[in-house]
Image 1 (cartoon, helix red, strand yellow):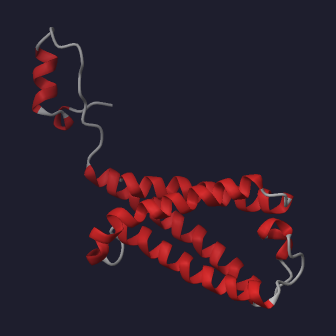
Image 2 (cartoon, one colour):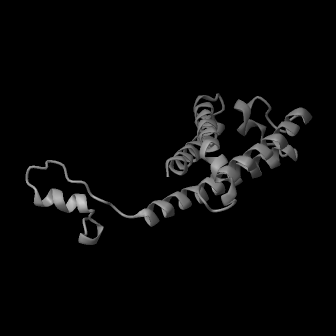
Image 3 (cartoon, helix red, strand yellow):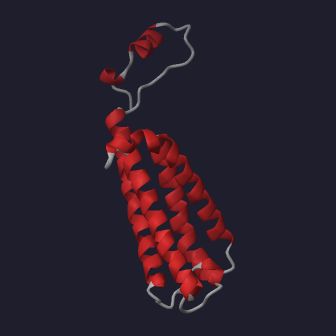
Length: 161
């Protein structure tokens, strides 16, 4: 929908000049974009929080190994893999902080760093999505592929927002 107060001077002049073939509309405003980016960052953070809780459960010895790593370690993870889960928790937490900072929700001083770091998050999310789509574990594919796809989509929104 186009409102008079939303039109730019250029749009108004184009509407008055029939020789102009393309109309440019100013749709929404910066607040709409900021809200969309903020909501995407919050969704990303909630989803990554779920992944972090899952990794902590694996590290604690919960028998969920068939839902991760292609089901290579059904049941409890071996000690080395539990340590890897804790390292991944740290990485995932940093990733969440990058997304929240880029969206302007926290650590606004990090903004210049997150301008480029967010593309690492997008790449990480893309790799995670691909890996979860091609895994041999049916349960991993059913559960984590949709989650990683949503993480990818929301990270892209934050990156370009």
